Image (cartoon, rainbow, N blue to C red; front, side, top):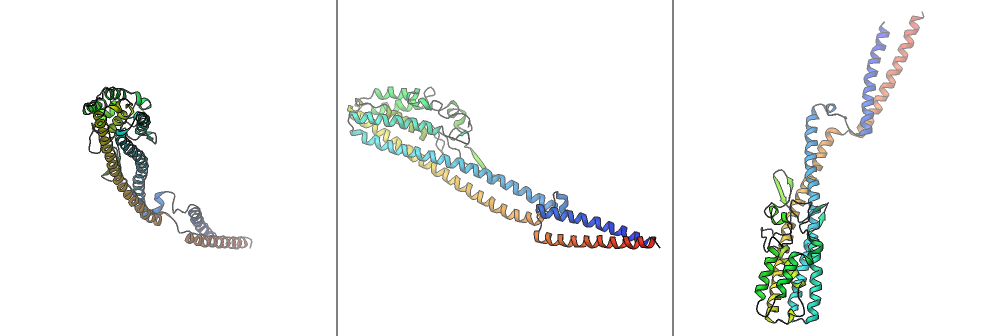
Amino acid sequence: MSIIGSIGNLAVDQAVLRLRLDNTLRQQSTGQKSEVYGGLGPEARRAIDLRGEVGRRESYANAADRALGRAAATQTVLSRLHDIAAELGAEALRARTMLGTGAEALAKTATAALEEVAALLNTRHGGEYLFGGSDVASPPVPNAAAIATSPMATAIATAVAGLDATNGATVIADTVTAATDATTTPFSPFMEGDGSTEAARAVQVADGERVAIGVFANRNPDGELAESWGRELMRNLAVLASVTPELAAEGGGWDGLLNGVAESLAGAATDLANEQAVLGAAEQRIERSQTWHKDTMVALRTQLGTLEEVDLAQASAELGQLKSRLEASYEATGMLSRLSLATLLR
């Protein structure tokens, strides 16, 4: 009976060894100490906390990445708009001494620029309009494809057609009205209504920290609407698109009109540069935050690895030892079984 009892004890030990062997094989295969937190023992709570912190920071880093993509697309558009404002402003100054054919060329150039500006303000990124505020599904310039014949452009053309030698300032004032009046504005009802006072779109970069990255088609960073860069850019391009050879002969009125256009486009170019600077500063804040989160995640994952991951070299060595012990146990069981059988046959 003592031999049989020894065999029973060996069987129990073998079962334990097999469980340890299976667990070590799984660890070697997956690289993880356990497939469930319960297998980590007292370190389970810390592992859960670390994994949650990694996930939280990963979410911030991903949000920053999307925001930087949106900001980069916005910067590209702003840069082109700035170039258009500067180039057409220079053309307006040169046009003061232009002959009739020069006025025709300027009008064609300005019309093309006006259409390009309207299209640029309707740029989308990731399926969302960049310059439309929270109304990301609707274009901020609804009539962009026909902006050259829109109510604003038509009203401005009518005002410019009435230019004479003395009324340059009056014509400019009339074009301002055309660009701001509710019935002729080039911008959507949302942009001129509820969207005119809403906060700029922002990204959450850390607990309690948001960075604004939204840019409005009809509004400057300081909240200015009536003389915002978007409105002034389209208004003055519409003015230049309306000039004719006959108007170039109006002397003082012609000079006054083009001086006003050139000055306004220079102001729009300055506002666009400021817009780019504000957005650039926001990009830097987001990049710093993203870098911080990524660096922190590296440290957190290192800590998590010490809790959840196995030392493969150690696991391999332990696997060899377990196999040797199990084989030795099986041999001992076989020997005891033979001894027990011999005893029974006596």
